[in-house]
Length: 365
Ligand SMILES: [Zn+2]
Image 1 (cartoon, helix red, strand yellow):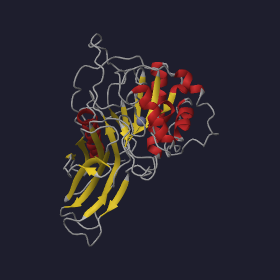
Image 2 (cartoon, helix red, strand yellow; image 1 turned 60 degrees about the vertical axis):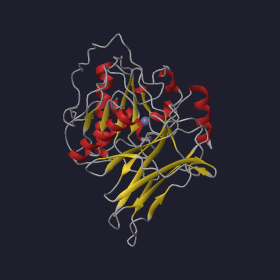
Image 3 (tube, protein in one colour; image 1 turned 30 degrees about the horizontal axis):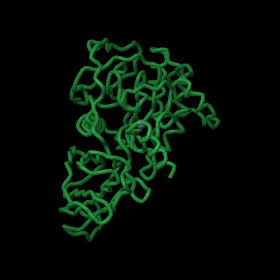
Image 4 (cartoon, helix red, strand yellow; image 1 turned 120 degrees about the horizontal axis):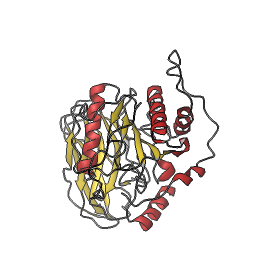
């Protein structure tokens, strides 16, 4: 209920909002629960069987033009979606699905509905092997947006400051170019997210995950580029998203001056990945460098939920934000047997409201 009220308030004030879903649309709820699921194909399932049915969603409290969703699928699984309300439902339709070689996929089901529309998605056996595992990470309702294009500062200096931790470059993960020129920003805060997707450790899987996130953001959400500046994979490697001094798209109404760091993984129940020690260590190094290179106050590191109506970065990662903030202010540890050790748990944070002092709302995305 709290989430619903927040969503309604958000709609009332902003026209669109990021309630629930990670960085863009509105999470779709089914009887009050998110759609995240692990689905195991039963041993005796036959072609044509329904492997999973979300059932009708709770009515969407606004007008949206698409349902976006992503997860992990297997060969021989069909997706079908329908929209409607009460007893009047449209036909089952095949949504657009883009699948990557490791099974990660994202999909879009276009809506022409009215306020109060419900949606329903089902997975159909089309020859999938028994015991295969299919994952739905997230289903969100979305009104396709375009980032604001700022005409003037297009030829911006995107050079970086010294001491930057090693990162996989955009060409390493075969990034598509941005659709148009970036907008320069002065860095003054950092926000931590989760991707709400997979948590790959293998390099090729991580690069593939970057491409999936970029496609989801560019083709699904209609953005200029991947929304984040840095993404940390399950092995603790950094992948460069947007240049850090280019305006990002990761925190609705709070993107100006805000560097977005996202952990690959889904750190919220029911998926509930655990943040890896290597990911935390990398985040500490990255935040330390951003603080030093750009003069950011350590207090200006936020979890996404501190500044938006969202579960991001998830109940399991959010408590690490304070740990990362604290560790980033400490001197660089000497090389030796310490790595992997995490900073001790800190007293429960009581500074959350204080940190809003650093927030200045801007109407950018
Ligand atoms: Zn987020």
